[in-house]
Amino acid sequence: MIVGLDIGGHHVAGALLNRQGHGILVKSYRHSETRSGAASAELLDAWAHLITTIAPDTDRVTGVGIAMPGPFDYRTGTAFFESNGKFQSLYGINVRDELQRRLPASHEIRFLNDATAFAVGCAAMGATGNCARLLAITLGTGLGAAFLDRGIPVIEEEPGAVPPGGCLWNLPFKHGIADDYVSSRWLLTEGARQSGRPQENVARMAADARQDEVVRSVFAEYGANLAAIVAPWARGFGAEAIMLGGRIAGAFDLFAPALRAGLAACDVATPILIHENTEDAAIVGAGQMFAPAFWAEARTRLPRR
Image (tube, rainbow, N blue to C red):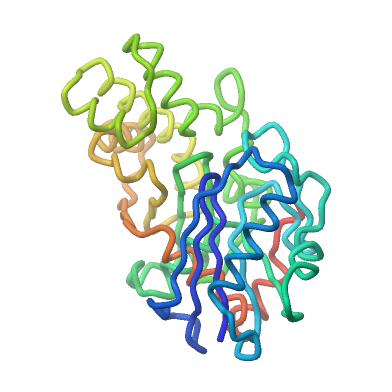
């Protein structure tokens, strides 16, 4: 059995996967809320505890695959979170070593970018159809992106096709970087500023937007920002589909018109797909690191930061 784990800014979820890595054993599924600003020991203890809760019979586990946000060295397992609002206490810490110290048995631990794991999981689950070139975007605490060619991550290609490391979040945009304008931080801050009311979370803000034109306009601006960031890379990569996931994707109806209009203005007519269960896809994608054919190609395509 393989343990697949999806670590997000506010949660950690995981499950046992069958030998093929395509199916979650439902009874093993576990989910826990976490504090992204917690001390390193608290985070590492929580993640290790969830792994042992998922797989108390450690003799049956052949490996642990973890979907992890960046910046992160996915080859060595070292965290480089800095100035992005999450896990900053882990900066410079080798997460692989620290988790292995906390687990009751020695397991091989492999890491994959969380957006990449989402994309790989979608492909493994058949959610992308016959699409060969996929651009996957996760929208939540931050902006995640992954470029897949026939199910294999692409982190470098000819100029203009794939950004460095396959990342969009850190690209220059307006007065900062892309992450500043399409993260939940931007949405809640801008929603509060324009409406004059505090916005507690994205789900409640989305409900408010369906009754309030001012709040709805913030989602429209969000969609326009996303289009401006994604369009040149969707076109340059030759994406056959754009797959959206993450918590903010649940409000797709509110920003879809502006997103589609912005893409069309850039001559991008790529179909947009929505995968509603980002966690499941990321867990399955993390498990794919123990599929020999996938790992033989993907292991050399892991970002260093």
